[in-house]
Length: 65
Image (cartoon, rainbow, N blue to C red; front, side, top):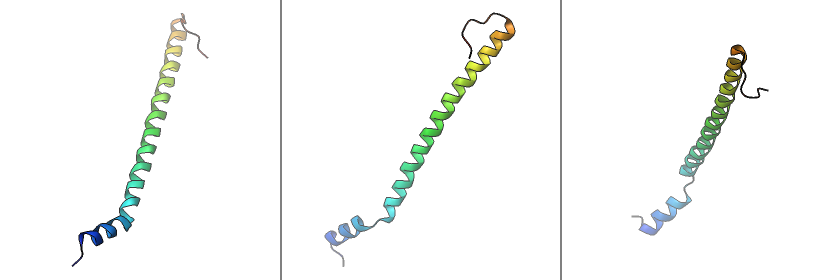
């Protein structure tokens, strides 16, 4: 029968669970990067659409580049 100390040492030496945590952290970082990129992209697309709309209306109110 294993003692509590032996069980705890075996648990701490086990590295299989650590890789799962690493994948979860990496996945979270990638998801955060994708969300940030699409948020910035959406803002820029909105600015371009506003510039096109102002140009069509003939009265541009902001500087469109």
